[in-house]
Length: 158
Image 1 (tube, helix red, strand yellow):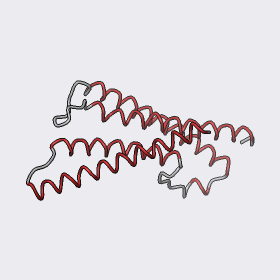
Image 2 (cartoon, one colour; image 1 turned 45 degrees about the vertical axis):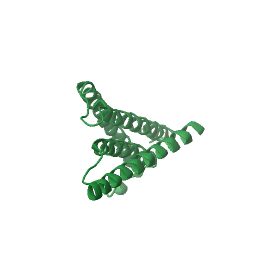
Image 3 (tube, rainbow, N blue to C red; image 1 turned 90 degrees about the vertical axis):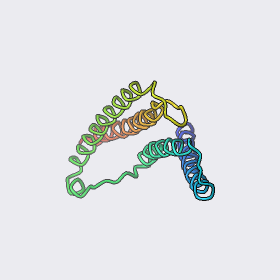
Image 4 (tube, rainbow, N blue to C red; image 1 turned 90 degrees about the horizontal axis):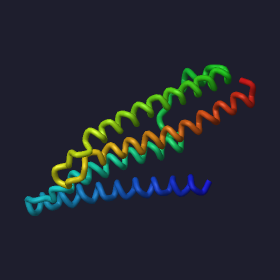
């Protein structure tokens, strides 16, 4: 799918920009403090925002590529039908967890909407938007995986 490809590339580019901006801000602020005994007040805050967004975008990218750490020593010893059942249960549990994260992040976003970060003046809710975007994206990825597992189980008569 072209949309999937563009979305994937956009997430990668945004994560790279966040990383580069974060490293640059921290590096230049360190240089300013070392040589001039003064730094840019808002750079630490902006670097923290970049870090949060980089992490949450990375979660989605790794989930899409199925690169998260898994321990399958028990599941790999089970018969194929039970492996499939475990995958479906796992997907359902992940969907439940992503629902909790989305709801919690949304509630935190509402609570902190009028709180401004001291140096940048950006709403604190901006940090929680990253968690909402990430958990909803992860929810979609797992939902597609769950549908594939269910279709496979019905097609094989499991």
